[in-house]
Amino acid sequence: MSSPSIEAVNLSKRYGSFLALSNLSLKIEGSKCVGFLGPNGAGKTTTLKIFTDMIRASEGRALINGVDVHLNKKQALNSVGALIESPEIYPALTPREALSMVSDLRGLPRAESRKKIEETVAEVKMSEWLDKKVGKFSKGMKQRINVAAALLSDPEIIILDEPTTGLDPRGQSEVRDIVKDLKKKNRLVFMSSHLLNEVQEICDEVAMIDHGKLIVYDRLSNVTARFSADGSNSVEIETSKDIDDQTINSNIASFADVSSVERLDSRKVRIHFSGGFQNQERLLEDLVAMKIGLISFRPSSSALEDTYLKLIKDTL
Amino acid sequence: MTQPTPSTLSIWKKRVVPSSVSQVGTITKYELVNYFRSRRFFVLLIIGLIISGLLTALVGYYRPESFLSSALNFYSSWWAGSITFVIILSGIFYGGDAISGEFQNKTGYFLVANPLRRSSIYVGKWLGALMASMIMLGVFAAITIGNGVYYFGLNIPYQLWESLLFSVLYLIAVLGFTFFFSSLFKGTSMSILVTAILFLFAFNLIQTLVEGLVKIEPWFLITYGAQIIGNVLVDPYPTTRTQGFGRDAFTSYAATIPEGIAILLTYFLVTAVLGLLLFEKKEFT
Image (tube, rainbow over all chains, first blue to last red; front, side, top):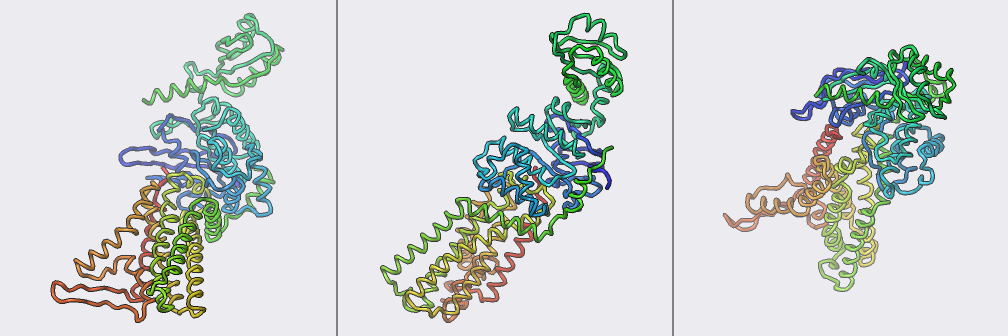
């Protein structure tokens, strides 16, 4: 079986004289999470809607696993679970009924359907609401059921359009955990978001779009490195005890590839370094070897934000 | 690159998307569940019961000659006088926002991103509306026949069964038409309003004007075709007649049964195809 893929081939979309998407070509392949970023009106949702046949491309083709979504929607979307914007469910139905409808439409075996629905609803922490009418739910609760509907059939490709919209912080965190689990299950997740730290936390790759044009598509670390002022990456570390100035200025700053070190507070430091994954791995090993009580090591959230702001500003 | 695990592979290989016919059945089933749970089914049922109750009480109390002179007259006055109104109400209640609601209420976003054709959604919803309306029609017919049996015994004229069949055909045409208008608009209030105005006022007004002023047979109006529901309960079957002479002449047109069937079928086929095409083209922007 070939790896899951999503491909836009010269995709354009016009609304009257407004060009929402301009000749977008993008191929995403393999099991990974790809963040789809861009400002409001950039064309993110338009792209995702074309991939789910909710709107039609003016030009070009949208392919899922090599199958044209518009020409053969049933085959193309068979392997896709999608959550576009915030759908509403018939208010008189219960989550069990709404998900049974999705299950029936997708041909899940009856014997497995009931168990699968209960498992998926438990995953989005809505078990106690399984047999209550959706009409009484809050926006966040409905969004949880929408996430469950997208995951119900164990799709190999998941298309999510700002999936944490309307969710409280706990709900957002839970959805992020679900996406991380999907990565472990070797799924391809294509996810638009305005939350850069969310993308930084869970995505392996990032595609940025503005004014309907693809600006960049690459690994997250490559994108932040390529577009940062000095070509460097940065990570934020946190320790269980205070870090003294000497450790920062003499020890950490002297590591190979480290360009500068910035104290955030008594236990948090941001380290700027050049190079990609290999250098990042070596830096982590060096920090662990220092035995400074390292409890957290993650790419700096500001790196993606800096890159995003630079790229988007540059296109204005 | 990592490959899918054997367990997930087996799930993907096993799963086959159901046929479009099966998916239509699924949409119909849940559309009916939604109707039965929502207020609109019971509101319409109550309206139907109120109309039937009023007729039962009025006929029982006043014993009007026009109703009780013969079994055929009874069914003609009772059934033909009110069933078209019940059908139009069903069309407005179930068809008025059936498609536009999918856009305005965003329920379509939940369905459309699944591996199913839009035509399956359209047909499934249409069948759901037809079945819910048929229940309504069945209840109204049962009360009508119950009253008829009370006054005239089990001697039910065969014309009533013909009229029932034509009523179903009219219901099919009305739902085709209302679904078409529902596809035309993205807002539910507009589609419901236009449908209601057309069926409750506009068609009748146009028919009166066309017959009285233009003096041509209004064969292009669905309401003209629907006259066969009542005409079949008149013995002898009404024919086109002209009264008066010259400029004062007035022609009363009556569609024959084949003409009526043709008008209703044409309305259904044309509006069903147009509605389906509109829904296929419409974008969830």
